[in-house]
Amino acid sequence: MKAQENKTGLPLVQLGVTRPEELTALFADLRGRFDDDCACACDESTWKVFRDRWLGRKSGVLTQITDNWLKPATPELKRAVGASLNELRSHVESQIEARRAAIESGAEEAAVARERVDLSLPGVIHPIGSHHLICQVFQEIEDIFFSIGFSVVEGPEIETPYYNFEALNIPEFHPVRDDMDTFYIDLPKGAATPLLLRTHTSPMQIRAMEKRKPPVRVIVPGKVYRRDNPDATHSFMFHQVEGLAVDTDITFCDFTGTIEYFVKQFFGAGVKTRFRPSYFPFTEPSVEFDVSCIFCGGSGTAAGGGACSKCKGAGWIELFGAGMVDPAVYGFVDYDPKKVSGFAFGMGIDRLAMLRYGIDDIQVFFQNDVRFLRQFP
Ligand code: PHE
Image (cartoon, rainbow, N blue to C red; front, side, top):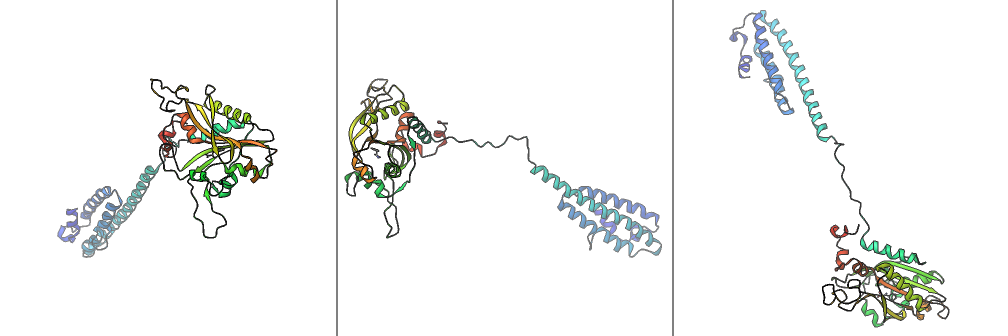
């Protein structure tokens, strides 16, 4: 470029050009240089510099030729210089435009290539989840009770003290309320009734009996809440399945037979059951149901000798509370205690799942660690 700039910077006389024929070589040389230069403009920014070098108004090559060669040319040269210059100008302008178009479409092609969707790539796999273990156990329990004529109902997790306590024969200052540290809900002053997170699914006994006349056979799966500090066996939220059967002739035998049927379906035909006296204000008599230890087969002795760590050598594991519905409860739902009888039970699902699947920390149910959850597809 230097040589060329020098040439176009000087008048023709100084270049020793005096005859029109001598212009041919001069312009051919310029055209060759332009073509070389053009080939080097391969992106937008180098193309701009290139364009200005040749077409720039003040000091572009064509301006220089006009100023230094054409304007001061002798009359016999002027025509020829003008003609050659026009020819060169049209070549320069068309090539610069062609180059711009080429660069633009090249950039477009590159972008298209970059953004192209490669349909041959394997797709993104969205793993399909599965039911949480607690859900699976709920379903298993529901199926067992379905098969013997129970239906499933659900109820509110936010309850009134009436349903959670009073109608279950637990009046306000009854000491049993101390066992159920309760979450009360902050309500605006003047609210009609206090509200609380239900501490058990038993309020649904009342709601179910209010809604239908005997016979009633329902189970109620759901979440319950207590102000328990979290540890391996406690959580402020856990799950229960309540059961209630009320009819005109339900006996204690129906009660224990039903529970035994359930326990054998759930844990296997080989287990034994027993019940011990217990106390709940809404059942009379009340019992605690035990199952023979599923880890040591009820022997109380671990496989390698010594006491079984799961049942602490007792051979029995406490399962859940139950009992015959206390006649006082019927008074709250307009059932005639002289005509009807029934039984109720309330089992902790998390506990049942832990026993059945050998899980020793209730917290894993709620930590949502997929490594745990994937074990129960
Ligand atoms: N509601 C009781 C509890 O949560 C369990 C229970 C239910 C006991 C039904 C007897 C009858 O501890």
